[in-house]
Length: 227
Image: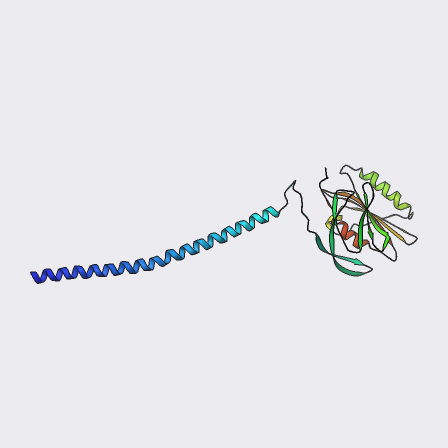
């Protein structure tokens, strides 16, 4: 009996030792996994935070209704002069005479001509220029077309209506042209949702910068009126 009791006691101790080893192995194995999960969770949380911050940044960069638009200081512009395609950097200019900004190519300058009229002219020849007039939204369009036709009639009796450029900025524009004595005059009456303006382009047969003027004109954007 004593030998049997000792045998049972030894079996119990042996079982307890095995159970302890198993628990230690389980704890060791399980201890690595929570650590890894915490790192993965932290990484996922950080990535999620970065994505959220990027989304918030993008949303802050979007211009909502009634917000002011902040324009970059320069942009690349492609245009054609004398059949040659060129690409240059145009720089943002603000009109001191009317409430708008425009990107201007290096060979041209923007200047006030008279109240509510600016001129964008070729630096080396100020006889080649574009007159810019911002129009009120309630302008009488029929009268404007008649007056424009009469103005071009001073260049030539043969005032022709032309197709507007394919660009969306000019999609609803009325275009008139007249030529005479080496002069080429074009008028563009542009009426978009948030901008109405009259562009009058004065070119020479030997110096036709029409496309350059049109490329710059389509960057015109109204600004809030200064108080």
